[in-house]
Figure 1 (cartoon, helix red, strand yellow):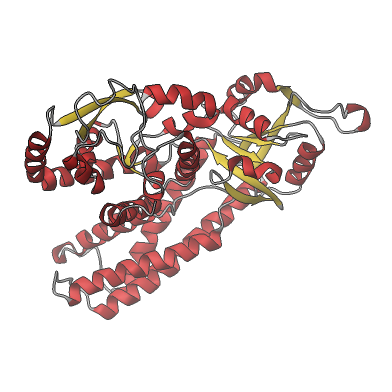
Figure 2: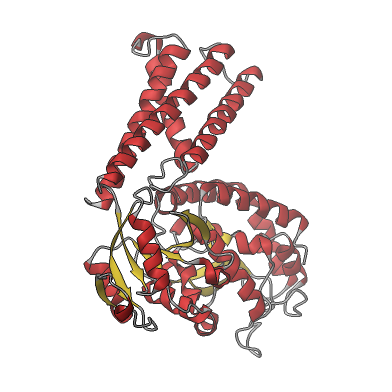
Length: 463
């Protein structure tokens, strides 16, 4: 089966090489020039174009190496990405924002040839990928939790196909599995019990866990997910109990069986590297732009009420790390002396007059740009919460720790969908939004949230 990470890196490398070759032919045939003509500086244009396309394709998640990825959907993303980018470039040239050494017709022909070679290259590579999977090369190792009729049915269907990209290492005996050994002629490779599933995952280098409990209930599904949460594995749940993770997971077809994906591996190229680079860039530019206004805000706070300008409070960040969040003070001094830790409501009497203005336009949040630069927070992510509330929320919602897998954000899917938390029911709804964001984390979703943040800042929430 080979090393999964090495296989994926090799496949990614071939995709990159194929895209560069596609760019070479598009430059040579579409623009009808010799890019090796160093004197004309055309090699520089070629390198710039390749960096642009690879960056855009990375942000568009077009370097996904999953065997189950729909190639048709991938092609549908390639063509609009290429042509929308070229239209944007042509528009800039027509408006005399810059001057390219190419005619407009050449650029359009370049785009047509580029798209064709990109599609051809990916069809070729993914065809080879399927042939390798047929030879058991590049398969991900998986276990089925549940030695029962449902688990066996999934196992049988997986054995009749190789396109799913999974190699079943064996079964894990669930706590509530019925005794079917007497009524079955099949021999099952049982790797251990549910209590030892974490050791099984580590020992066998498992990539996927298929949950096929005989009598799935919301509590059982949650317990199972919590039990393996912390391992970089993907989990697939038979959809009987899909309401357990409504708003949290994606549903995919696997050999005709609809399964709900819960991807616990968040270390993607975008989430691990590109997102951080973009955050630093956005925070730095925003900090420089807004700094002069901070002087006016500081004066307003001092004139309106007694107390410090900045309000620092301990919050919980990624992986449970504590940090001090920075905000402009919007409440009276020592606001929680009498009440203890409580959530702030819309008409909270502790909020000052100027603080109300700052909150209306979310200006009190702007000092968190400093937290972004230092790596405590991201521009987009789940809202960071105080240790006091997290201790209580973890008891009420066992899956709450899932939010701590990524950096908390100044804004986020939950923040633009719903205003401040006022009661635990609000947290329940926001958890669904947070889980949806974590499962679908991408540049496109972050951009959508960023635009939504501007809308909420100007027009406010509907509630």
